[in-house]
Length: 307
Image (cartoon, rainbow, N blue to C red; front, side, top):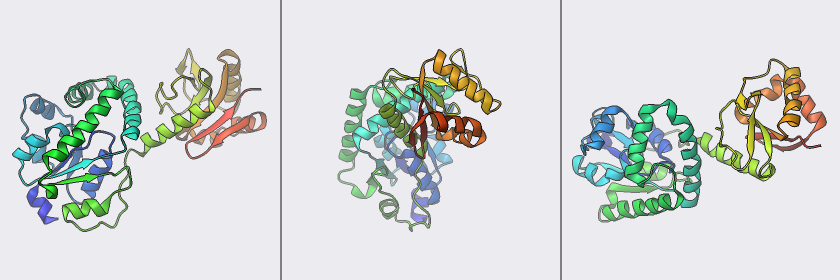
């Protein structure tokens, strides 16, 4: 650990959605104080002006994700002796994850103007686009991996290529950093996003394209959760979420109303709302008695509401 302390800096050069959150958590578990995706005003101003002696590195030993990924050559010059970790992932899986991530961010970031400003800037720097574009992202991914590996090709001791999503973890990371293996499982951050992607695929397999379904998700999945299908929040007024029902009788009444008025053919319970199935026992009993259960796993419970 002392060697890392003396070097001070560890840079995670992987693009977003390649396990960068997990890498940040792992570095912190190893005692290397690290931050993920810094987007504060000072970092924004410094990167815009081409000042790569980042002030945030006075506080942290490590920085991870795209605020540093495109500047690896400059950071190497500013912080000689540092370690660089390039997280990679199966490209097709990465593209699917990015597509979902970008759609959700477009919905959320209007509530966070500082993040929106930084993200638009750094996305333009890294990807040459602000919106998700599959062809452009695929090109940038290949070019970034190629450029980083070419830059460090004569310095293998300074670069680690790490596939966290593919199962690599402590053995490679600790060997590279020359620190002891910790007595803890390797962190797997962003599990929620992976669950969401799996859930979206499962809904697409059960709910036909164009169909309307009731979505009980505690407003956690986003309005674009199931592309090509129409999710209706529950309870619903004017197409908007109206909060949880007061009791099972209200829930059953609203369920039947949406079957008739909105043409809802399925009801989907996401894992954030699994408590409904216990709390609204009458609703759950009504669904079990009258409709076929199309799916039940740790992510979703789906009932087919068709006659």
